[in-house]
Image (cartoon, each protein chain N blue to C red):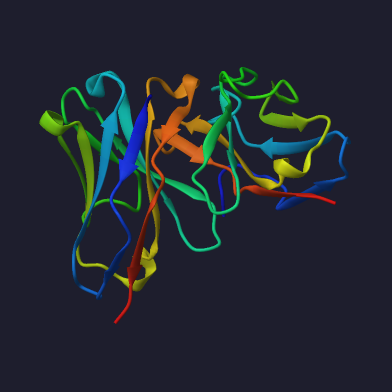
Length: 110
Length: 119
């Protein structure tokens, strides 16, 4: 059972916009910034969004992040087949005194 | 370019030990902390802890104390994860990932090392 709650799966068709939610509490998302990671099949995770809504260089602007209260969201617009991956949110947690990850969302492009 | 290159897959028997290496290049080793993250088969990511590459001081997440040891060899810019008294449930992919500050994220990851524990 992950500290941060994500839907286990999401799907969309090419060109569509999809969002993935990440729900936490006052000890994590409510107090700290959120990062998002993308894990393509069979590969290591890589940083997709940091500090709630910042994109590292090289990440397309189709990917965007937001945070409100104790929840965060990742939005992917103009969905492409290569976006099929697992997506994880992460936030610092006071109870753990370290980062906690969401359980991950498997995105399928139909 | 910045790289974290991990050692290869390991097959170990229960009760044995394993040491995973994470060799870095392309940046000042002591500027970034090093995290360790576990991913059990078919499961999500789990933060194991981190090591301060300046002081060598490790911090272990709950559930990763006792049998897990983080260490460094700064002369070769390498971080290590050692697991002793291996159990079947330690079978997983282990990743190292550098981080300057949590708000900036774990911005570079190793390719992962698969550890399989089986008799």
